[in-house]
Amino acid sequence: MSEQETDAVEQLAQPAQSLAQAGIQELYPADVAHLDPTPHLQTLTRAVLMNFLELVGTLSVNPTQGPEKVEHLQTLFYNLHDLINRYRPHQARESLIMTMED
Figure 1 (cartoon, rainbow, N blue to C red):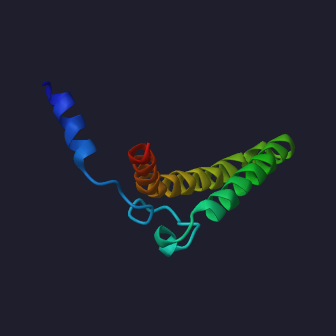
Figure 2 (cartoon, rainbow, N blue to C red):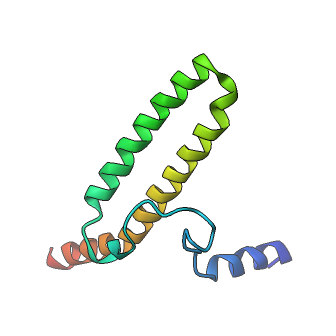
């Protein structure tokens, strides 16, 4: 294995950073791991849609304000991605249960 491949494997073996560790604002409650993430995912998805529409409107009027809106969208997407990743163990467990029942 080459040095580059070894570095990639080591990087994958490390636990992922939380949003707080990465310096990104969390837009959902910290105890969401114990709650149903569906309402939070729906809220964040609606926020992405609304912010995208605001971005398009802003760019048509004043393109210099675009980077601020893009940063906000980026924060929303980071939060959506993190919330989906927190849900993956539950999804895998449910898939395994369904497979075992068949």
